[in-house]
Amino acid sequence: QQQVKQSPQSLIVQKGGISIINCAYENTAFDYFPWYQQFPGKGPALLIAIRPDVSEKKEGRFTISFNKSAKQFSLHIMDSQPGDSATYFCAASKETSGSRLTFGEGTQLTVNP
Amino acid sequence: DAGVIQSPRHEVTEMGQEVTLRCKPISGHNSLFWYRQTMMRGLELLIYFNNNVPIDDSGMPEDRFSAKMPNASFSTLKIQPSEPRDSAVYFCASRPTGGLYLWGNEQFFGPGTRLTVL
Image (cartoon, rainbow over all chains, first blue to last red):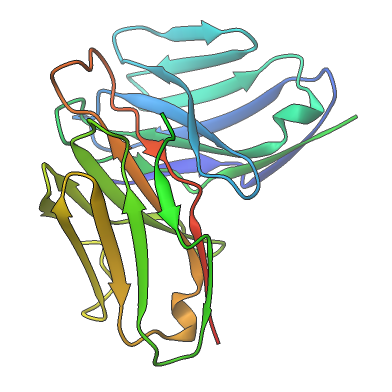
């Protein structure tokens, strides 16, 4: 019940296109859903996060869509840029002090110029 | 703030040798996490501490791995003896808990230590 499943494993998008990465979780106790971005040679860094009491959160070109009944959430990158090329991880946790994050398997995004 | 500091950044060692990875969390952060990243297994949580106390070490692969946090500003991950299958990038992350932190569970990752065991 602790798993977070992420797809696709890799994604190639043309500059200006929309990148979509999907995640599904099992544990209904999860109430915090972040996306992390990792560039080669760097550690992951928080990109955007959402709570389950909203269905969508947007920050610039990045949007999380959340479907509580389906236990799914997705990251949409609008107007994708070559600088967005990175590995993206979804994650989930119980938003309590000291709780752990469960990460998805990661998606390697390549945006071609 | 300098962020999470890890050392060394790269380590090459021979099978059977002891390896010690070091981490300095962000000042004021109460939680510290050790992760291992490989192509095959992705990002795996090995162990995490709250207020210097180990909370969950279920991800530690076997007895060859041990982690300590003697104080709020320092942690080590030790592998003894090391094996080629331990080759990976090891990340340390820290997070504030309660108090000043208003929402969310953001973890701040260090740059990682790339370990190669020959």
